[in-house]
Length: 612
Image (cartoon, rainbow, N blue to C red):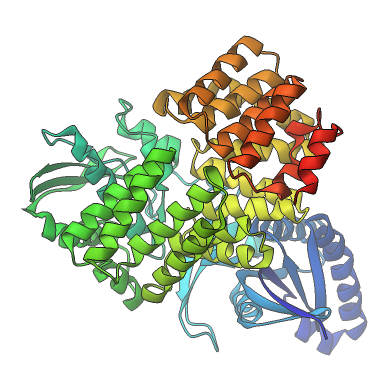
């Protein structure tokens, strides 16, 4: 008996009033069942769904992605509205289920069924796990309904409704309105990068770190949509007005502030602004020493919760009082480590490793520092040195983080990167999915999930994941390269062409203006320039990369990609051999890398592939 456990979007549908109809007109009831199948089956299949079974007048289906499940539900309701024979209730939940032969079991199925049962006639009700994955999707409007204690479900579930066109029946007509900033139902917020007003510009890591910590804490509260750190950081130093920023990020509230840090003394200013009317809801100045920073974070978060009139559950309250560490020096090392890790160059990743190790020395139970260490090791392996010990250290550190905090998204994301590089697909998928479930803004989680889907020849799913990364982190150029490759494989030539133009004229230049010492980015840019006839610019970028880091295996590999693209085969093969000698080992990627199509039949290339 075959079975597998995986994350799935589960959809339950039910015909409204079917039991009563069966009692008075059995023939009509059976006709409705047949019409229901004719409506739903083709739509479910069109959206890559799996029709599991019928349960009386109900239908159980599963989908690989949340977007497909919601899109199918909308199409089904629209079809029912057009025919006007009967109405459906639809409930959708994202959860872990067990597939056994042609059936599906688990708590996720139970929750989807319970949500469906309380949906309005003609309505689509979704759980918060679904909402978190579609809240930023263009063209999908939702509203919060209520928090409900569902039968046989331990914790209350926050329920949302997907808004659709009127059902065609006066009793359940719905009107769609765009959510506008300032709408009382909309608990969406962006935390702008806190400004460093210390005399020392080197203290900027602390103001950026404080911003990230606040975003992380607020993101864990139910009923609040918080813009990701990476998106917020794009507005660092901006001269745009609050209303422009709020409209661009589609949020109702903005938190902004400043930090002055002198030795151990802190002064933090914070203010919460209602975007719609540019009104300050509150402003506060907090003073203390570095050891008070955890209490200040809690105070700021609670004042936001009060201003937005959010009701906290006991679990939410635990989020606010939770302390990742009580050691201020360890916290400072952690923030410095994160700052260096985000810079992604070889030297800075090594500095990040040292700082996370120091944080752990100061606090051996510091889960965040272990997670940062795990991500640093995985990044170093993936980008700079393909040696197995880096992966083993990454897995060990990430698992250690989970010993101290089993709900730490960053640890699961780091595990996903490590498992991806070891080609442990199932383990990598599980880790990346868990990272996303815990943090809907986990761009690393979505990116690794996309890469794992690509390795599994699920390129439609991979494209969706890479698209999500570019929404969350518009400066994360590897995701654009991966997305363009997948578009090509799918034959989406228009999308691919548009993306290449954006990469050449906007994405790479913007990134390199901020990170001129990123050797890998220079080479990626060179490859795209070469592919699109910008040969002089391509050679300049390639030369810059090899000048920055002439002995690095990944730079040599990417240099080989560049010269293969411009059809200088001998140079490409020379660099590729040097890359392998320097430690490049990711032969699975080499086998499918389209940049080597020009030299794939060369004898030296074939010999290289046979070495593994």
